Image 1: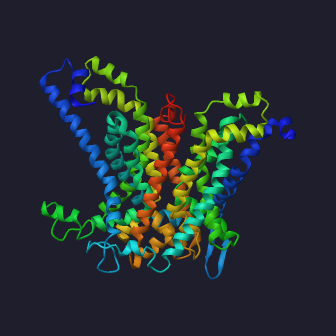
Image 2: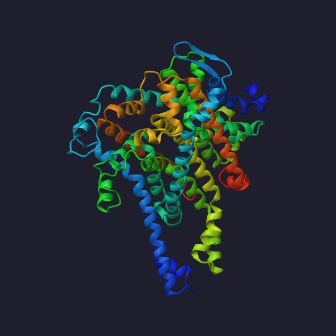
Image 3: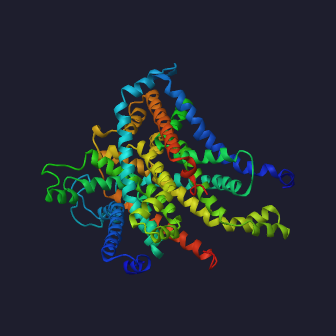
Length: 284
Length: 289
């Protein structure tokens, strides 16, 4: 709504002074909001811009000159490629398992009444409300007490753990919006429960499952604190950045960061468009 | 299948079992081992033994009191700043966003798509001694010629504010979006000034969002150590820095576990007190559904 429309619509009885005040407030709000957006987006612009930098020394902190070398050679730094590959493996496996486990929990919570519901909700909520450092510490304490060697397996276990809750919340949100009548109709038409699930329920909640899986994948790729605590000598991409930050910050880090950013935005937009295309007109 | 038909009551439990078992085994059980480790003594060479070593806890309160206090201060400041920055933003998107709402929300969460460590390193670039922000501040004589931004408390608090801002902005947006505009219009029709209508109608209606946003910001911020490590100096170290270095660099597992336990317990008490102060009914209405 424009200033003029708002002034006409709701402030008809007010004098010129009040109208000026309303306009000032209107623009002050916009200015504050835009300032906050700039604050949020400025570092992203810096990350992208500095992926094209040819840094003077080992640290990519001051602008020297434009180059495409880093993009031509994104893995041109020892151990960087291995860390990206490990991150993708962990993310793929952990999001797959967490999506399966989380979807089952979401189905139980959305479709059944059972004793222990409150306790289940609490157990889902707690991992999202606990500081990462506490979760990482306690997992490490568990592994240390059983002399479990730290590495791929312990990282995977941790990632599945912190991803489950986020999948449950995402899928349940999608389930909550669906009505039961389609499923009941299928059952009335003599579809078996299994066929009903495969042919009716699953397609209905597929966008929710995909969204939950993508969220889990993104959280896994980004996780540093828990991974750092339960990792041995294996390095995921964030661990590589952490180790590198002390001795050198190569511009390739910005290249990988930019690629991850672009991929995440692309997936997000695609999923939103897909959900919108599947929703019947008028039901939005 | 016929078994499940006869025992339909079992179905939800079968669905829950694998996921909840995973959470029990790798979230709940580890908490026990955190407590168990925190009462051990020993070192990496001789091994660790359980000795009811309560001194790990007394050390936590005496030796590391400063780190705990700093963590709460920084997290508190960052929460306040995040609130002040994101309330106008969330309000603007909810009330003036129009058909751009979804795009604007995507911009709000965009920082999450840049790896946490990389976006914090970007702040290092922005606040650097040769950076344009410091240049501008020097030109305006807001900062002395040899003044710095990097390696200061300001940088650490700004970094934490930045990193958790979307956690504040999103719940605020959700509760602002639910505000019934007719109530605000009614207040204005009854000659309440814009400011009064906001303070007496809009703001109270968004308490659930404020409650969720402050918790989602404060809890992770209090445990953060990345901003203090990358943007600060040893003088800005928070309790998270101590816990990670005790675990990963010094292998003083019992002390690290005790500190972690105190952090968790302290936050739990703080959250409960906060919930009681806000009133649990008011705090959760509208957000749980």
